[in-house]
Image (tube, rainbow, N blue to C red; front, top):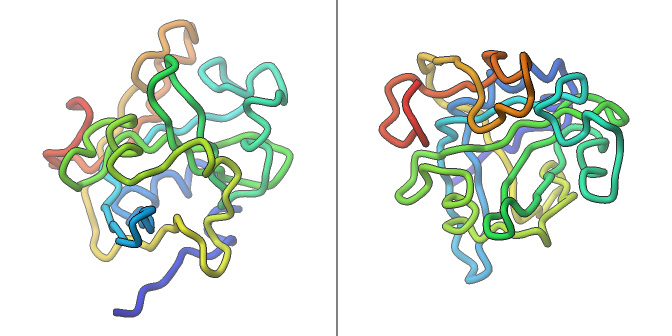
Amino acid sequence: MAFMILAREFFLRSPMAAARELVGAYLCCERHDGTVLRARIAELELYTQDERGCHAYNGCTARNDAMFLAGGHAYVYLCYGLHNMLNIVLGDGGYAAAVLIRACEYPGCDGPGKLTRVLGISRSDNKADLCAPGARIWLEPRDRACKIAAGPRVGIDYAGPDAALSWRFGIADSKFLSRPF
């Protein structure tokens, strides 16, 4: 079956526009056993360097430098020493913006740590070019319209007023959300 990988230009647009269009798109991953999983993105959260919820709010570090790459790269980090978290970098290189993929419509993918475990994504995938020919992880466009819900991001109370930004987007009627809107 032929598929269309999202081109770099998709990721270089406004981070907000790209984030909303990634809801309902497909996250595809060739697992280490050779199988390919294709999971519809049900929920994500946008982060940019201009707000306190973002890892890059205080500038570029060894941990977050992937966020400063051009859109279409992966930023994978370890959360609480347990869970790998997959982010897709958006926008022009040098400006840190990314979406955390929180849930996909695939069994066992109703949380960001769960989906990386199911898809076999690890920190070794950090900085992977998702637009490169032969990439192990890639994205495909949505194939149907979906009603998008928006609300505050999860678990960033430390971000003060920025925690209230409605930058969490998801498929409104999905049964795979990490939590309801």
